[in-house]
Length: 403
Ligand code: BEZ
Image (cartoon, rainbow, N blue to C red; front, side):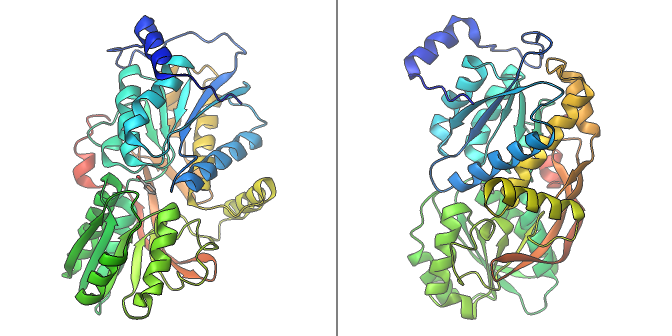
């Protein structure tokens, strides 16, 4: 594995020296790859900050898929290049250029944070480098900024929000819901998805509450929720921030009187860390801890054996990214420079995932079931399917000029 570091000035000099392919659009073949050369995989993920555990799980999942394909992709060895994006949008352009321009990776895998991913997309669209998104749900990625070389293996932020909204819209006793979220693309799109689903049932939004990312000073907002007394609270937080929110919600006694719901990120990967604070919290997501698929049971066993950790939705996303890339590269015999054929092959794959089988939409977003889950002990227990074979937000899909 390679983890290069160099200064901004040196990087800019190299970029100005002709390494950057400004305006290249989708002129895919950059450098013909000699048969047998290693496939260069760039990982741009958060390894520090509130989303660090998510980045680690994604990398683990990807490495597990690679291990299961004999350590090779399309018959070729793999060389890794890593950048810690710190979930920091201001550093994203420099960070992705390190992988694309300096390291000349064949594929960039990243990232978690929607704002960082938006900046990555500006570079990957321009250069045409293959970009696989293993988490960030920003609607633009498979909406207005969709492109043949941009493929998302995770979800759009709208999807789990919509799933949870549909589930609550069917409950007669939930007429008034408060929302609380980090104020950036992911929180805003998650709340939109929730409202699109929930408001169909005739319910009302008591109030939308916002807090800047990655702030975790929730006290004033929790006091406001207590005084609003909604029938439920819908919350978008993830990683370390979600753990803190769950603990604070319980500490304030709100878990006893106002049921908490959300997209599955609210409770995934953190249940051991929050003790009992999340008991009973219901969420919607494309994964749960006790799915009945044989594929999932095998994956979970293999993951625990390899990393001595329980897998979560982020590990599944990394794993599925590896499965899809391996299938595509197998179809083109490892000829990663044949990008059109590689992408066409990936578009045809049905991914046999631990979450259940899924395929890419025309805009390159997974079409997948949204499961309703409830926290019991340290598991997100499957309760049923909230929405079957869900595609993306129609208003985002309408903005994608591909397919
Ligand atoms: C996002 O920024 O898109 C995101 C981050 C963590 C979990 C889910 C979505």
